[in-house]
Structures are given as structure tokens and as C-alpha cells.
Amino acid sequence: MSDLNIAMIPYQSGATRFEYSRYLSQDGTKWVRHGLFRAFHENGALASEGNYENGVENGLWRDFHENGQVAAEGNYLYGIEKGKWKYWDESGA
Image 1 (spheres, rainbow, N blue to C red):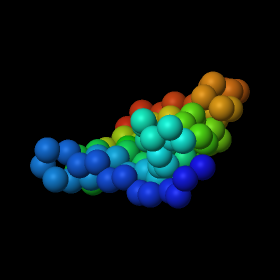
Image 2: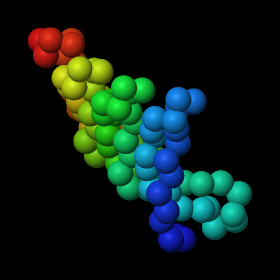
Image 3: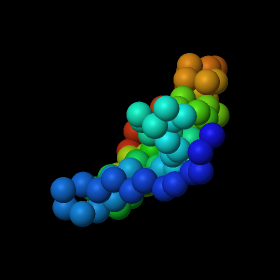
Image 4: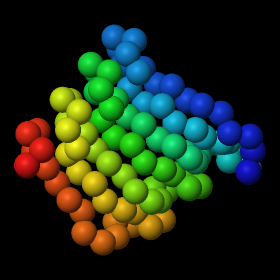
């Protein structure tokens, strides 16, 4: 694996939309997500957080409503949803 670097992808407004670590594939043709991934609502609130391992989701992932309440939580095992996922509305119920 090549050295990791941080990608920060903005909304048109300039606010951060995505922030994640990545490395360049061995053949140099594509970027591969690896490590912490975060997506943000345009208001700056965290929208999603989880980890990638060599380009696929792995481990605990959480999605959030714009008000900061958890919207969904579950696990991935190398790109496949595993176990029971939980979901909440904006009030936390």
C-alpha cells in the first residue's frame, strides 16, 4: 500500500462534504479509501462516520441527522452489512 493522504471534498458552498484517508492503487489508476471516513451535512454537522479497509466499509458505521441525533448504526464486514442495524428519527426515538 502506498502512503495515505487525506482527501477533503467540498460542497459548492466551500463547506466540507467528505473527509477521508486514501491511497493510490498499485497501478496508479484510482484512489482507494482506507481508514476513517466522514461525511458532513452542508451545515457542518457530521452526517456519516465509519472506516474503510482497502476500499470497502468495515466495522461500525453511524449516520446522523442534521440536528446531531444518531439516524442509523450498524456494522459492515468487508463491505457487507452484518447483524442488526438500528434506526432513529430526528428526536432520537
